[in-house]
Amino acid sequence: MLGVRTTSLRPLARIRRIVVRLVFGALVIGLLVVGGTAFRVWQVARVDDWTKADMAIVLGAAQYNGVPSDVLAARLEHALGLYREGVVGYIATTGGRQPGDNFTEGQVGKLWLVERGVPEDRVLQVGEGADTLGSLRAVASVAQERDLKTAVIVSDPWHSLRARTMAEDAGLRAWTSPTRVGPNVQTRETQWFFIKRETGALLYYRLMKAHAGVFDELKLPKIG
Image (cartoon, rainbow, N blue to C red; front, side, top):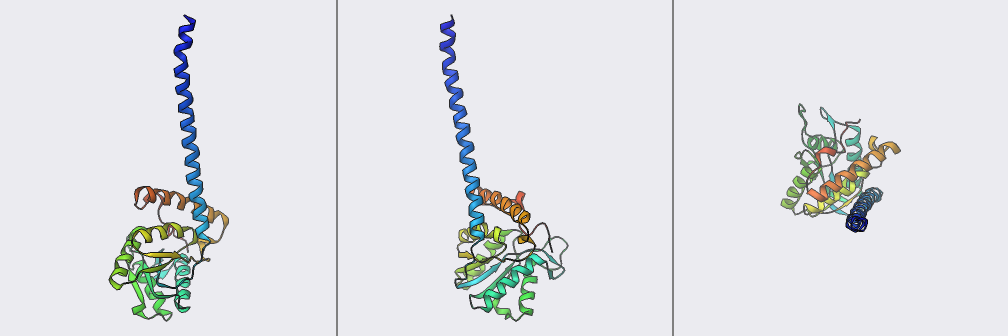
Protein backbone atom coordinates (compact mmCIF):
# COMPACT_ATOMS: atom_id res chain seq x y z
CA MET A 1 0.00 0.00 0.00
CA LEU A 2 2.78 2.38 0.86
CA GLY A 3 4.32 1.76 -2.51
CA VAL A 4 1.07 2.67 -4.22
CA ARG A 5 0.71 5.91 -2.28
CA THR A 6 4.30 6.97 -2.98
CA THR A 7 3.86 6.26 -6.66
CA SER A 8 0.62 8.25 -6.86
CA LEU A 9 2.19 11.26 -5.15
CA ARG A 10 5.14 11.54 -7.53
CA PRO A 11 3.16 13.05 -10.46
CA LEU A 12 1.64 15.64 -8.10
CA ALA A 13 5.08 16.61 -6.83
CA ARG A 14 6.33 17.01 -10.41
CA ILE A 15 3.31 19.19 -11.28
CA ARG A 16 3.96 21.38 -8.24
CA ARG A 17 7.61 21.84 -9.26
CA ILE A 18 6.58 22.76 -12.80
CA VAL A 19 4.03 25.31 -11.53
CA VAL A 20 6.58 26.85 -9.16
CA ARG A 21 9.11 27.14 -11.98
CA LEU A 22 6.54 28.70 -14.31
CA VAL A 23 5.49 31.24 -11.69
CA PHE A 24 9.10 32.05 -10.87
CA GLY A 25 9.93 32.40 -14.58
CA ALA A 26 6.95 34.70 -15.13
CA LEU A 27 8.03 36.89 -12.19
CA VAL A 28 11.58 37.11 -13.51
CA ILE A 29 10.37 38.03 -17.01
CA GLY A 30 7.99 40.62 -15.54
CA LEU A 31 10.77 42.20 -13.50
CA LEU A 32 13.04 42.30 -16.55
CA VAL A 33 10.35 43.94 -18.68
CA VAL A 34 9.49 46.55 -16.04
CA GLY A 35 13.14 47.19 -15.19
CA GLY A 36 14.14 47.42 -18.85
CA THR A 37 11.31 49.85 -19.59
CA ALA A 38 12.22 52.02 -16.60
CA PHE A 39 15.83 52.09 -17.78
CA ARG A 40 14.74 53.17 -21.28
CA VAL A 41 12.53 55.92 -19.80
CA TRP A 42 15.56 57.18 -17.86
CA GLN A 43 17.91 56.75 -20.83
CA VAL A 44 15.76 58.62 -23.35
CA ALA A 45 15.11 61.34 -20.76
CA ARG A 46 18.82 62.21 -21.02
CA VAL A 47 18.65 62.75 -24.80
CA ASP A 48 18.49 66.34 -26.05
CA ASP A 49 18.41 66.16 -29.85
CA TRP A 50 18.61 69.47 -31.72
CA THR A 51 18.54 67.89 -35.17
CA LYS A 52 16.56 70.13 -37.54
CA ALA A 53 12.90 69.24 -37.86
CA ASP A 54 9.79 70.67 -39.49
CA MET A 55 8.26 71.56 -36.14
CA ALA A 56 8.50 71.40 -32.39
CA ILE A 57 5.54 69.91 -30.53
CA VAL A 58 4.95 71.44 -27.11
CA LEU A 59 2.88 69.04 -25.05
CA GLY A 60 0.24 70.77 -22.97
CA ALA A 61 0.29 71.35 -19.23
CA ALA A 62 -1.80 73.32 -16.79
CA GLN A 63 -2.70 76.95 -17.43
CA TYR A 64 -4.49 79.39 -15.18
CA ASN A 65 -6.92 81.71 -16.96
CA GLY A 66 -4.53 82.38 -19.81
CA VAL A 67 -1.29 82.20 -17.82
CA PRO A 68 0.95 79.15 -18.32
CA SER A 69 1.88 77.16 -15.24
CA ASP A 70 5.58 76.88 -14.49
CA VAL A 71 5.56 73.44 -16.12
CA LEU A 72 4.05 74.75 -19.36
CA ALA A 73 6.18 77.90 -19.37
CA ALA A 74 9.36 75.81 -19.13
CA ARG A 75 8.30 73.77 -22.16
CA LEU A 76 7.37 76.87 -24.16
CA GLU A 77 10.67 78.56 -23.30
CA HIS A 78 12.56 75.53 -24.57
CA ALA A 79 10.56 75.40 -27.81
CA LEU A 80 11.17 79.12 -28.30
CA GLY A 81 14.90 78.45 -28.08
CA LEU A 82 14.62 75.74 -30.74
CA TYR A 83 12.77 78.14 -33.04
CA ARG A 84 15.19 81.03 -32.52
CA GLU A 85 18.15 78.75 -33.23
CA GLY A 86 16.57 77.67 -36.53
CA VAL A 87 16.10 74.07 -35.43
CA VAL A 88 12.38 74.14 -36.30
CA GLY A 89 10.23 76.16 -38.67
CA TYR A 90 6.96 75.77 -36.74
CA ILE A 91 5.88 75.26 -33.17
CA ALA A 92 2.73 73.24 -32.45
CA THR A 93 1.07 74.05 -29.13
CA THR A 94 -1.22 71.34 -27.80
CA GLY A 95 -3.69 70.68 -25.04
CA GLY A 96 -7.42 70.99 -24.58
CA ARG A 97 -9.61 72.73 -22.04
CA GLN A 98 -10.26 71.56 -18.49
CA PRO A 99 -13.81 71.95 -17.12
CA GLY A 100 -14.42 75.62 -16.26
CA ASP A 101 -11.39 76.93 -18.20
CA ASN A 102 -11.71 79.94 -20.50
CA PHE A 103 -8.70 78.93 -22.59
CA THR A 104 -7.28 75.74 -24.01
CA GLU A 105 -3.68 74.91 -23.22
CA GLY A 106 -2.97 75.18 -26.95
CA GLN A 107 -4.35 78.73 -27.03
CA VAL A 108 -2.29 79.83 -24.05
CA GLY A 109 0.84 78.35 -25.61
CA LYS A 110 0.29 80.24 -28.84
CA LEU A 111 -0.39 83.54 -27.06
CA TRP A 112 2.78 83.13 -25.01
CA LEU A 113 4.92 82.47 -28.08
CA VAL A 114 3.43 85.24 -30.21
CA GLU A 115 4.01 87.74 -27.39
CA ARG A 116 7.70 86.80 -27.58
CA GLY A 117 8.04 87.42 -31.28
CA VAL A 118 7.09 84.18 -33.00
CA PRO A 119 4.93 85.00 -36.06
CA GLU A 120 1.35 83.79 -35.70
CA ASP A 121 1.55 81.76 -38.89
CA ARG A 122 4.48 79.84 -37.42
CA VAL A 123 2.51 78.63 -34.41
CA LEU A 124 0.15 75.74 -35.00
CA GLN A 125 -2.46 75.86 -32.26
CA VAL A 126 -3.91 72.39 -31.72
CA GLY A 127 -6.27 72.81 -28.80
CA GLU A 128 -7.54 69.26 -28.98
CA GLY A 129 -6.86 66.15 -26.98
CA ALA A 130 -7.28 65.56 -23.27
CA ASP A 131 -4.08 63.52 -23.04
CA THR A 132 -0.76 62.94 -24.79
CA LEU A 133 -2.13 60.40 -27.23
CA GLY A 134 -5.07 62.57 -28.29
CA SER A 135 -2.87 65.64 -28.66
CA LEU A 136 -0.26 63.88 -30.77
CA ARG A 137 -2.84 62.32 -33.04
CA ALA A 138 -4.41 65.76 -33.55
CA VAL A 139 -1.00 67.30 -34.33
CA ALA A 140 -0.20 64.49 -36.77
CA SER A 141 -3.43 65.24 -38.64
CA VAL A 142 -2.58 68.95 -38.91
CA ALA A 143 0.99 68.11 -39.92
CA GLN A 144 -0.21 65.85 -42.71
CA GLU A 145 -2.33 68.67 -44.14
CA ARG A 146 0.75 70.94 -44.21
CA ASP A 147 3.16 68.25 -45.38
CA LEU A 148 5.17 68.43 -42.15
CA LYS A 149 6.83 65.11 -41.49
CA THR A 150 9.41 65.56 -38.72
CA ALA A 151 9.01 66.77 -35.17
CA VAL A 152 10.97 67.51 -32.01
CA ILE A 153 8.93 66.59 -28.94
CA VAL A 154 9.20 69.15 -26.12
CA SER A 155 8.01 68.00 -22.71
CA ASP A 156 9.57 66.95 -19.42
CA PRO A 157 12.45 64.46 -19.68
CA TRP A 158 10.58 61.48 -18.23
CA HIS A 159 7.72 61.95 -20.69
CA SER A 160 10.03 61.77 -23.72
CA LEU A 161 9.99 58.06 -24.54
CA ARG A 162 6.23 57.60 -24.35
CA ALA A 163 5.55 60.83 -26.27
CA ARG A 164 8.04 59.90 -28.98
CA THR A 165 6.57 56.42 -29.28
CA MET A 166 3.05 57.82 -29.66
CA ALA A 167 4.18 60.43 -32.21
CA GLU A 168 5.86 57.79 -34.33
CA ASP A 169 2.79 55.57 -34.14
CA ALA A 170 0.75 58.57 -35.35
CA GLY A 171 2.91 58.78 -38.49
CA LEU A 172 5.54 61.37 -37.57
CA ARG A 173 9.31 60.97 -37.56
CA ALA A 174 10.09 62.25 -34.10
CA TRP A 175 12.90 62.80 -31.64
CA THR A 176 13.06 64.55 -28.29
CA SER A 177 14.46 67.71 -26.75
CA PRO A 178 13.02 68.00 -23.23
CA THR A 179 13.17 70.98 -20.94
CA ARG A 180 15.65 70.74 -18.07
CA VAL A 181 13.91 73.24 -15.82
CA GLY A 182 10.55 73.45 -14.09
CA PRO A 183 8.89 71.79 -11.10
CA ASN A 184 8.83 68.33 -12.67
CA VAL A 185 12.62 68.06 -12.84
CA GLN A 186 13.77 69.73 -9.65
CA THR A 187 14.24 66.96 -7.08
CA ARG A 188 15.27 63.31 -7.12
CA GLU A 189 11.99 62.39 -5.44
CA THR A 190 10.01 64.09 -8.21
CA GLN A 191 12.15 62.47 -10.89
CA TRP A 192 11.71 58.99 -9.38
CA PHE A 193 7.95 59.52 -9.10
CA PHE A 194 7.63 60.39 -12.79
CA ILE A 195 9.94 57.59 -13.94
CA LYS A 196 7.72 55.07 -12.11
CA ARG A 197 4.54 56.60 -13.52
CA GLU A 198 5.89 56.79 -17.07
CA THR A 199 7.08 53.19 -16.90
CA GLY A 200 3.58 52.01 -16.06
CA ALA A 201 1.93 54.29 -18.61
CA LEU A 202 4.29 53.22 -21.40
CA LEU A 203 3.81 49.52 -20.69
CA TYR A 204 0.04 50.03 -20.75
CA TYR A 205 0.25 51.93 -24.04
CA ARG A 206 2.41 49.27 -25.69
CA LEU A 207 -0.03 46.60 -24.60
CA MET A 208 -3.31 48.39 -25.32
CA LYS A 209 -2.32 51.17 -27.77
CA ALA A 210 -4.42 53.49 -25.63
CA HIS A 211 -3.89 56.25 -23.09
CA ALA A 212 -3.56 54.91 -19.56
CA GLY A 213 -6.05 57.09 -17.71
CA VAL A 214 -5.17 55.47 -14.40
CA PHE A 215 -1.68 56.97 -14.63
CA ASP A 216 -2.94 60.40 -15.69
CA GLU A 217 -0.78 62.88 -17.57
CA LEU A 218 2.51 64.45 -16.53
CA LYS A 219 0.74 67.80 -16.36
CA LEU A 220 -0.95 66.51 -13.20
CA PRO A 221 -0.70 67.32 -10.40
CA LYS A 222 -0.99 70.97 -11.37
CA ILE A 223 2.29 72.43 -10.24
CA GLY A 224 3.34 76.01 -10.78
